[in-house]
Length: 119
Image (cartoon, rainbow, N blue to C red):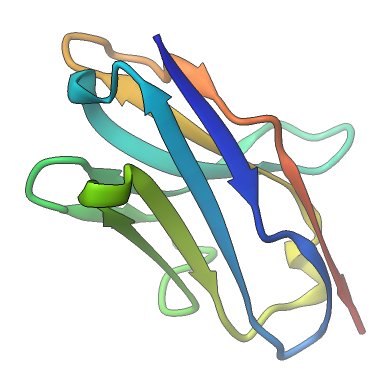
């Protein structure tokens, strides 16, 4: 099992920046990838960015490409989401997720952190 704890959400004006953090604990040696997703009430959860734990290859949704950057610190077992040029439509609850070796789905989820972008 891997446990995830997120931090860094909040209120920001449009055009501003925020950095989200997600610290993993437990059986972190089983990590294959980590990602960030978001959800607006009443809508489906949207995958934003993914990073391979080994090698660091990244993937982005078109909606955030060029504005958001996912990174990791393996020594701290932490993944980050740097969000720049934020827009009101980025307002959502943001979740980090962990995928483990041998799994085809997200196996662990953070508790979620709210990001609100005011116009």
